Length: 161
Image (cartoon, rainbow, N blue to C red):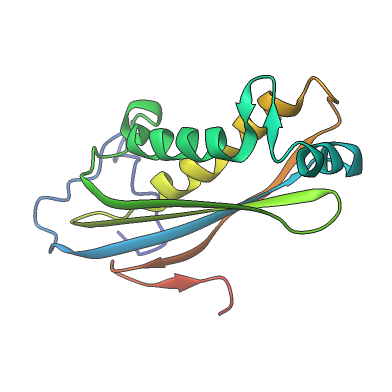
């Protein structure tokens, strides 16, 4: 099997979970990023109300949702291994007059990476912001959900490379 083949597909095309039993335990880290286009009106309202809505503090609730989602990734994505995560950090910030950026960092010491956990955390944090702000507009757009860094496995990855 080449390095470029699909790892979750068996010889007959069936779905299969990767056997990580013989892999070495290493420190694993991944960072994913999502951008959410809120629009100037919503950003101004968030600033005016100090990030508060009727549903609560927008970025705080989204941070907790992202952390919870990263911890539940194996329950959401069928072929992901359940992992003991050592760190999850969600950073949400306004990046201009109409957008916010979410970064999710996940770490573990294990036999498989945490890319899916980081992507899940960033995605669910963005969806939570959407849910909390949709009363003001449904023109909110979640975009550019992507892995920006991974290290500790067979090969490292950094979006700047």
